[in-house]
Length: 115
Image (cartoon, rainbow, N blue to C red):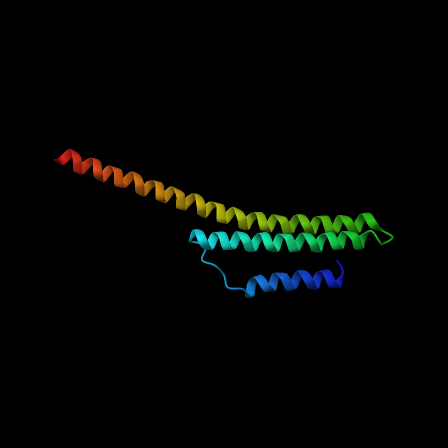
């Protein structure tokens, strides 16, 4: 990895840490977090593509490109894990909302049957 690419990647990651973190317990916060992840993913892909192009100028291309490919896979896996957490929270929120509807219907049914 070139120094410039490494520096760019570090700055991108630091920027995401410094930025205010949305409350992922709310749908709006999860959407903001998804947008952040997408933005970081795009920046990460750009860095890895630049690294790959830089590898092609070297004498030993294959090992350099393999290192870049492995770093890219690790990076993408991290983004996928973050998205999986957000998806889990979405499913939990939807399940809680559905459970609340079921409970409300049960209460209405009980109230109607008592009359």
